[in-house]
Image (tube, rainbow, N blue to C red; front, side, top):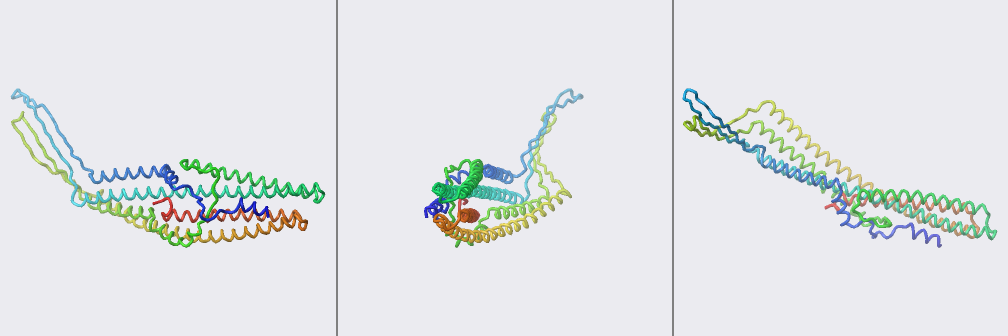
Length: 405
């Protein structure tokens, strides 16, 4: 009975309401400080700058002038002369509105890409987090098993001293303890590596000394279908792809309009023969579009068509990923329940075997075998619980129900 209580205290999960995730404020601070997120936010600023440029247009006022001194030998005098032009190209009707739309859509694309960067950072964080929690739980399981075997070995040593057990039994018990110590060391190495990688990737997280137990939220199972649907409707990846397609369509229409080049209007002022001749006038410059502009328009139209189908592809990929997550998460939860039931049976069998060995009804080999099976059952339950909790949490993140707004 003591053996069963010890293992249950050290190896079984806490109630499902236990908090196994880091504080939300710390997580959001860690996400905001993640380099990929900072880079994505910088691209939003870049997109806003590009939008400002498109609103202003590519044309600027050009000032051109010449100042010269003319000498007329027959008149034996010099004349100060100048020529000044002030010009600017003007966007033809329809072009400015398309430029503004393309700029605004570019900002929307960048914002959604930035939010998707936060999404991906959150998924990376939760992967590392549950890797650490799972490794810590496996280490606790190994420690609990080692403690149980040490207790059994001490009991065998006392019986050997009383000549109630063979020396071979003591040797077998000692070998089992040594094997358990090896498992503890290996589990500790995996746990420490997982913690180090988590701390290095997200240094803003204040990690506790001991990892919390993994808690699978039972209440989320009925909401899995809703989470899967929200993952599609709230996908920043889909929105970014749709806005990209809209932007490319606007740029294609803009390129079609640009087959008719923008005219340049100007004002010219001049003075000749020292002011004897003066003039002010306007001028118009109009280039004629040719094959080059036609080719650019065709390229933009093709790019717009490609962006439309790429958006459809992204939507289909996200929907498929969400459907796969839903199916996998349901299966993970079912597997975890089966593993939990197996642990209860394996622990009960190990406890009965231990009592039988204590009273001399069963051999030590039977007890060690039962202990091994119980250890493996608990390890399998930990792996199943880790996978189930990770799957549920990732679905919550994808649905913007956790950490992501």
